[in-house]
Image (tube, rainbow, N blue to C red; front, side):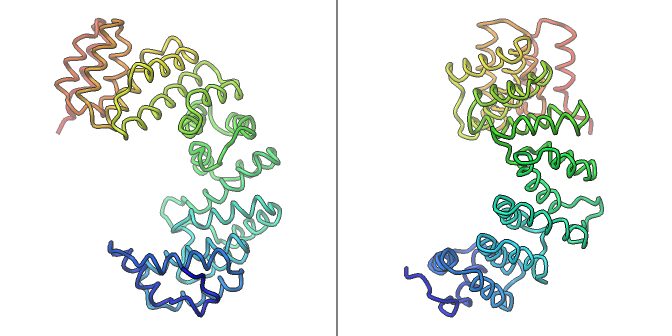
Length: 362
């Protein structure tokens, strides 16, 4: 398709119809959408801003208008982030609390190019009430996401300032940012600074959860080896190693579960070797718990329960049974789960597991 030479060659009415069709679950006109994307890649900031002004006047449904304008804001942010974000905040059709990811991505790019100006703009908007929450609980998702973008950059350039910003936030916001490590986009170069920030600003009982959140992203990208390297970088305590190893194993097998691929001998050997290296006393519990997560995400409870039986027969140990069965919310077949519980040799542990497997009182 030829690239439109100007905004006059963008058929906004046809584009509006395509957006409405998409919003209503129909088949959009992909030709119009591709033409728009190609134009946005090559157009300058003035042209994109002019297109936003025209799009705002279209006779669109609210959802379709927001979707189109958010798309244009994203494109403009690649060319002129301040202008894009100012337009997003001033538009009567947009609410930064909606589609926060679209606006945060522009701010993240701005932080990389000109962090001083981006932070000054952000603080001005905060002071002017631009990030004031409208919710009853006072939670501002937009503020959380923008702060995370700022902190993610500062972790690599000015950790002391990152801590200063974080400590100025409400406690609930601090916890949410640190316990959802993906918001900070922590990488190998900023892991040590991230660990220091967690230890300096979160209570001890919440720190492992923050690390585990980062481990979730790591295990998907770099496998168990990446998680192990992270634990070495942050000089994790034994308790942290066990909690993070368990979370990484759970996430790894949940991913396998979504593909409905029952873990094979090599998969389990890799998991157990990782757990053994991080928390040897908890290897069996970690293995059982991870397989419970697999059973839940795959819907293959019967097959997973059979695998647990086989593993227990090869190495009779209550821990793998307890690790699996204590995730009672994942036990889709309570009868089969109780049959497994009967194999637990310790009467007290067996009774505790059976109690958890009882259906909730009406």
